Amino acid sequence: MEHFLKDSSESLREKVVLLDFGGQYSMLIARRVREAGVYCEMLPCDTSWKKILEHSPVGIIFSGSPASVYQEKAPRVDPAIYEGGVPILGICYGMHLLAGDLGGEVKKGSRSEYGRTSFTIEEPEPLFKDASFRDDSFCNGWMSHQDEVLSPPPGFNVLARTENNTMAAIGNHAQKIYGVQFHPEVFHTPGGNNVLQNFLFEVCHCSKTWTPRSFIEDATARIRQVIGGQEKVVCALSGGVDSSVVAFLLDKAVAHRVVYIFVDHGLLRLDEAKEVVKLYREKLQGEFLHIDARERFLNRLAGVKDPEEKRKIIGNEFIAVFKENALSRGDISYLAQGTIYPDVIESGSACGAAVIKSHHNVGGLPEELGFELIEPLRELFKDEVRLVGSELGLPDSILKRQPFPGPGLAVRIIGAVSAEKLSLLQKADAIFRNEVTKAGLADQLWQYFAVLTDVNVVGVKGDDRHYGPVIALRAVVSEDAMTADWAKLSLDLLGKISARITGEIPEVARGVYDITSKPPGTIEWE
Image 1 (cartoon, rainbow, N blue to C red):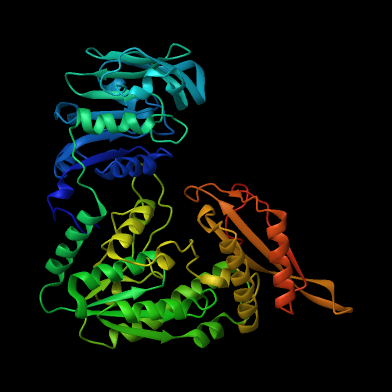
Image 2: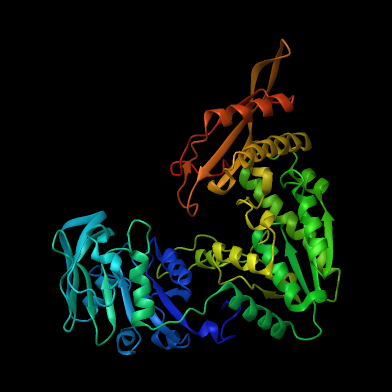
């Protein structure tokens, strides 16, 4: 499915196309370009030149790849790209590919270069023209390769060399085609963002038109155009960031012609359902339906221990409840939901890349519901969703909410779920979150939450033997959840939290702290 705002606004027409060869940093490249104020869209690397031209790109970037260009069936591009007159930047594999395609020589190097590698700039213009690169301490790049360009194509200059004398950057100024061996998009390349921005603004001559405000203007105009003057739309609300931003966009675009359905499965954090219901009722102009399905979900989950089975039950039940309430209306033509760009990418983007998972968001709402689908956030990364939400006036209580699993606390209760266990975990989790917030650490942590383990241990309470459950605390720091490290919370803070949990919740016998990083662990327990 093409993204919601395709060909809908002038501001989105200034676009950089990122051809994805399956590199681990491809999504990060797109984010860095957008952070610079330029819209960037990822396409599979084998997209035809004719199809690329439909996007009217002002620049093209080739991503990295785990492949080698001289391998059989190595991913390639349509050769017409090189004759199209659009500036090109190849990164790592992308540099190898354009060098080989245009007449250079690429082979496996005599030595691999991984991690931080020093390089010397031989020609500053245009990629290294900033003052930051005049300081030797900035001439470092994050490398991850074993291949190298042995000789550049005709018409190309060597712009930089590594300490091993391999080519770190090449360029053909006349054709505006450049390649860098290092990864400018990663944090570990000092000045890397400057390299990308020099390509965008010095080579492609972009202007900064990609902003939250421009997106909102385009999205609201497109929503009105799609829905028309009379039709109604139903919006599936989960209480999370994505669906809330969609709701506020719809409110701005078509106001009273939206029916919002919030299915309360009872698996949210303590008092969270009350908070989001209050917000939606106060701020949204359309009809709001709060469906209390807590007992229904608990009945369906009774006795189920397997986490995957829990997920299936919750997803299927969500669909069933939503279906009953949405289809019974009879006056609705469109369904809006909070699919975001990483969901689309994970459903298959790169050449030969496996589909990680197919996303239909919000519990997996199926297309056979009979509504036309609207996904206004389909081109946004998570951080962009939050920026748009801030521009729309959403409160921090929604925007800064830490990531939360779709099945809710059902997958933070190890083993079978019950009303008693759910209440116990909600209280423990609330204490943990309260103490982290009071300590001023909430903004420094990616996630922090409590887990009710399936373990009971002996303890002593009031001079009597006590036998009760163990609560595990989990707090991690991360940039993007791909990797994470356990948070080094102070012993005093952990002691205070443990004392409160065991003191204020009579059933709990003990508290423990999880010190496992990702990998080898995952952030969630189930």
